[in-house]
Amino acid sequence: MVDIDRSRSYPIFPVVFGVRFCLIPGADGYVAGSDGTVWSCRTKGGSKLRYSLCWHRLRPAISRQGYRKVRIEIGGRKRFVKVSRLILFSFVGFCPPEMEACHNNGKRRDDRLENLRWDSQFSNTMDRERHRHQRRYRRLMAKLRGRETTIRRLLSEQKG
Image (cartoon, rainbow, N blue to C red; front, side, top):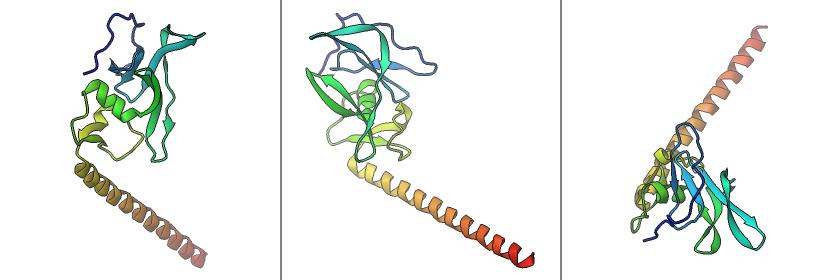
């Protein structure tokens, strides 16, 4: 188990209305927000690492699969980590065996804590199937609405 280094004195956590913050275990100088944000108080000062007096929000990159990821230093190595996994790891705990981070609403960029859970790959696949059917239905309804307006326009042109 990774312990948080409590000997370090970090600046006061950022103050954002309605957002809780939690240190990311094993990642010194980083916190995760319940709104899906990742913050850092690390700065580069010459050849050695220093900690600033204020937190700054990390800007996530988007992976090829559409998930948000940030580059953080864990165990002396910088690596990209999915924001969803960091949020769950910070607030819920370690990922149980054979589980993965799942988005409840199917939106890959929605990394709020209330939208995330650890669950099995099978359950995640079933969710994906359910969300895909919802998207198909919305697309079909949009097409029907588009055809309906086209028919109305044609009828109004014939009358006029």
